[in-house]
Image (cartoon, rainbow, N blue to C red; front, top):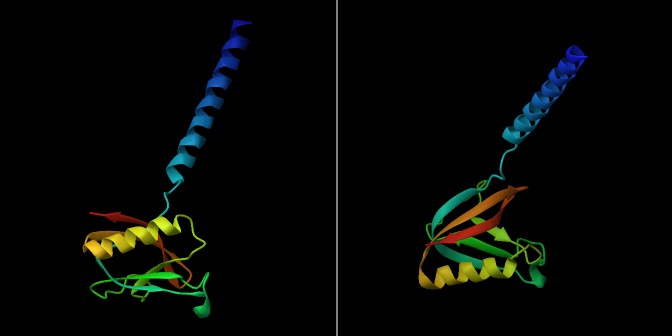
Length: 122
């Protein structure tokens, strides 16, 4: 009976070990969302209205003051009016522009253009 219990205990420990190994491998293989960034002062701002295709036509576009290409050959990042936190992101960009603050714009490439993900203002 002891031998049988000992074998079952070994099997249970082996299963626990394998389960932990699978969980650890899964966690280690997960990668956080990748966002590229550009830092500097905000330059030109373009707001697109319904006559030009808004909503959904890269409604609020932000250029850096240096005019540098930001992503995929394009010198601007965008946020659409339908995107989460649109108002807060737009307000942050406008505030940074008016104060001449340095910002870091984080963005993700979506198709041919880059969508603003978040802003750090210093």
